Image (cartoon, rainbow, N blue to C red; front, side):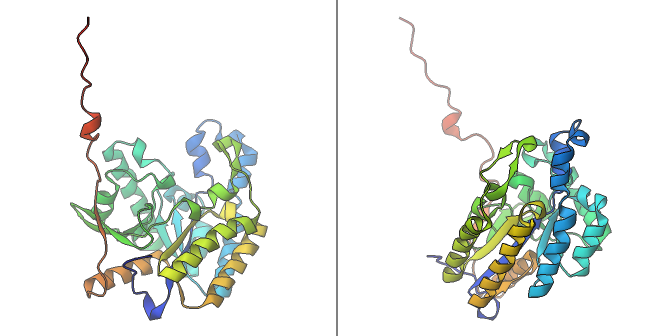
Length: 305
């Protein structure tokens, strides 16, 4: 069903990345600038990251896997201890906005300003510039791909246009897209957060895992790329994390599964393209520069009788 699967390393049937977006409380400050300090219960729910991240790291150590954490740069500055723990275990820190701002609500020059600011903070904190980016809440703008290429990032993981990696082509160069989609996000499965205007029906962990594992089964069978978009304060809750651990064990027992940080997956894809082992699909961005012409035509009005 996948016509052009990537040749994954060592004959792996699929590539897998459990990525976590470490938004912590920045999203509350952005949504409720004045009221955020008063919303103590919601704040405590988001700050559960301080419990969940050490738990997730311990789980990764047990399975000897390294993964990718997408970080708003404000959270890096606010919670440096958590960043240090992640880096100590050899995981990747990737960019995810400064304060989880929405690029589609910003003028182009402001989007570029915040992108460059987050790159600078990550470079100062980790010792190297981020190699990848995920748009906050998937809000990838007309300018995003070009700005990523201009600033030397090699991959994005915001878009949903395939089951395998593909290339985003811009005037400033190419970016590897490592796609995911909403079914791979933990937010629709678990999040009930009235102060943030989310009221999802909360599922038992087994119900959510049925969705994630159905996606994995298909990717393993057909050679795809399986990328989760999870949050420590959501999927790092005790019962859910226990079930995630069981899920990883099931996946590894299946065999021929490549768990890797997204940077390593992107570099493998680039190497396959460079040596001719694989030819990617290419999307030239932006898809549209303006309103489609069919909607720009003024309707003809009949003459009044």
